[in-house]
Image 1 (spheres, rainbow, N blue to C red):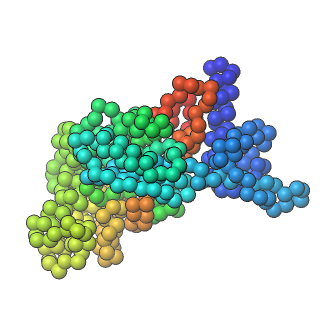
Image 2: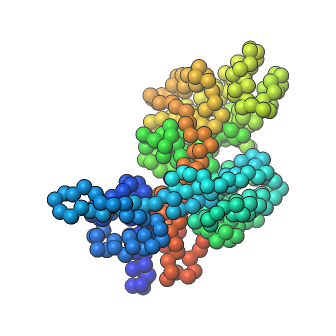
Length: 399
């Protein structure tokens, strides 16, 4: 490493430390920033000036006097970062431009063609850029299925046939933005941890019930991904004696008790849930078959909760997706089933943010890795626009 390279790396670390501290702790003085980051005030001067020049940091007046001159307070302007967030789901995708305060500036919804998923994503991005007043700063792609540490996506039926190129690579190339791909359930968990049902715990498991059944594990405040990125794939748990067959994109548990499977079972007993959440349709039906079907579904979802409790012993299990649409009575019944099967006490709760959890999760992701929206070092003309799921480029420090 040459002296200039070492100095550049040190400068980037200092820049990211200032951003991380301001995002996590809010308004503070230069003295407080120095104490929190471990850098001297003089060494941070250049970083603060650069962030102010970029429009990320603003001065917000004077703090209270501690006996001398009142200190100038600094604040990260969350409106200065415009995130392009693309959420991929079964049959459709949503492209939003949001800032780090959570304000959605513009949003478009498009159909997802499983035969041409890349074209569908690019069409949505083109539509978003066409109506956005200001260009985006960076991009996050929320993807169903397993997203490896290298950003490869597998076991994702919603995306149709595998593509020759990763979606986030194509988006980065077309948009010129730092782009990351992340598992959608992981983003939901980060969102609930940031300002929802898990904001007061550092260890929890999230179980998402939708067109698939997935899980996310947050341990010591960070998403646990596993060696290949497939930690939390609870939809592949065996069910009714069935084991997952090799290469299958749908596991036994979700094959029987995802929302898609539940909707088919509901139709077989005469309940049409096309225009409503199938859970709500079963809840409001007077038919005994509907109550029995919902009871069987909560048995399956409780089983997933018991497994997570046995394996990771978290402080809390959060049920999300359609499971969050259960009535108070059904929530209590599901919680009781998890508690009855768990070897240790566990707190059960339900997601609070709904679809907004994806937005909050993407913001949390950026707060933990501010290099995503900071400009590339001018001394590194070869630095790539493409980043990978949950990973930090080798030349960037982990934050």
